[in-house]
Length: 406
Image 1: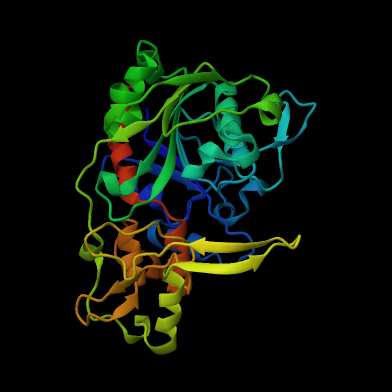
Image 2: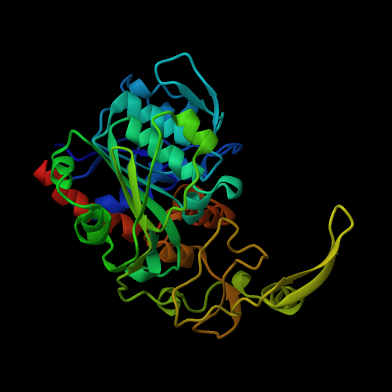
């Protein structure tokens, strides 16, 4: 089996970089990156600056920067691994179709583009990344969205493992929790091997996720099943998914695991010294930051006239050097509570983090997003959207062994 990859929603190439760091022969045959509403596709251009463009089966390179919804999935080159960090959206099914596939998702929901790609190309293995709240959304029908994803994968002949991974517990510099989904076709040798494993064995010791991200302890396993009718799942399914689990033949098993911690990279280790003056905070701006980061109790009135007190606790100010960084958002470096404020190791003045430090928090090479003239604000935005690259390398180590056995 060839180590061929298709990368959807590629951003600036975190999946590809994570696999290529293994130097084990992974070849990305096609990728897709398109940011809605942007005149300049900075992330796509950064990706191409690092890796070059990819041709579809018609010999065209222009499709990699198009809306994936407009791409004919049959023109995507064959691949054995499909990867992508897709947005967390409302995955409910819009309506049934007369076609054999039976459903069509709401327009613009990108999960359906993954499903269409799997239908057209039938990758043997998949790794997808999403926010941790995917397992609990939407609030009014907890677990429905992830249930739809599992039902789709089951329909297409895949078994699935998932884990919510806190990157800081596995040697990264950021406390970033993300849901990783590993799916494999029931026609693979790997699937044949896993058929003899119990759900407990797969989740705790023998599965793909357990080997990539070792488990310290296992809670009680609960189970359910996903219906073959995906429309029914959309309308009725509700379940409390935990941070680890497994699905085979529509039977779902989940439990809360405790992660086996590795030494994290502390925030102080990624900081630069004596940075450019425009990153520093002073005067009225510093006062605004102090207010935003502090505790608050603010009287407010709701739309129906109800009066209440809005309260929020303090955020560490500045961010401590002796812990991994907090989760970075696309709004990083703008005036809000979630942006990091640090003490510069050289000047000891308070400042924002630099784009290079943002890249280090995500495990990218320094100045990764500087190629192609990307504006500084977009560099932060792209890092806020990115995944933690070393987590992909950890999973790639396991994939190397699986592909070798195939």
